[in-house]
Amino acid sequence: MTGSWLIRMVFVMARIEPVLSRLNPGRSMQVLPKAQLFLLAFCLFVVGKAAAQPLDINGEVVSETVSENPAAAGEAREEVVEEQLDPEEQLGLDLRNVITSWASAWQSQMDDIYLLHYDPDFVPEGFSTLADWEAARRTRISGPDTISISLREFELLTARENMAVVRLMLLYSRPGYADQTRKELVLRLRGHIWQITQERNLDVQILPSP
Image (tube, rainbow, N blue to C red):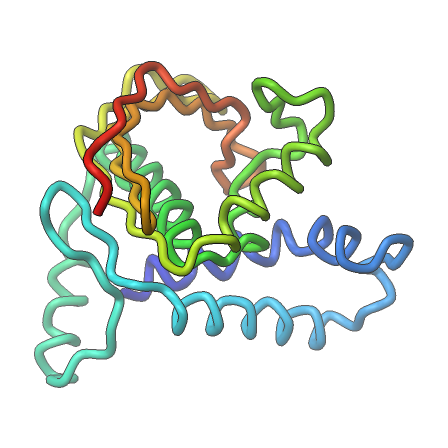
């Protein structure tokens, strides 16, 4: 899945400076040679991919794994390259990839990678500062023994220039708790990277605990 690989590599490269500044306040990305920066981004990508659990999307389990049949995998990639998507279909695919990556990081309990999916100007509901929200999210993500997430009913509502609005149903469970939430996400395109700038829970229903 070369396209997805490149998207995630570019995504990590584009957003690695905020992570460094959060982990090492006062340290600038500029002090790192480009080769080291690329290596760090690559390591984050590999770690994220290795730790990610298969994600349930519309009832289908999605997992990026190495094919046991390289020849068949190569033929599949050639078919994908030959298939041309119109701009609207490509936009929908790009947004699905971003949201899948976001949910996978959440399910894999990789809080740094999860937070990379949010725009620097993201305004969280119910928190006075972004730092307070980030601290709360880290606790919620890293605390449970396991997390399971399923995505349903992805819908692209609007898309114009550098903004897009999507809705989806997210099924969440951890030991002792489960719910399903209809979410609305507003994403902003910065350069070539879509990031979440607003997140609203339209409806939350508590489900029987697993």
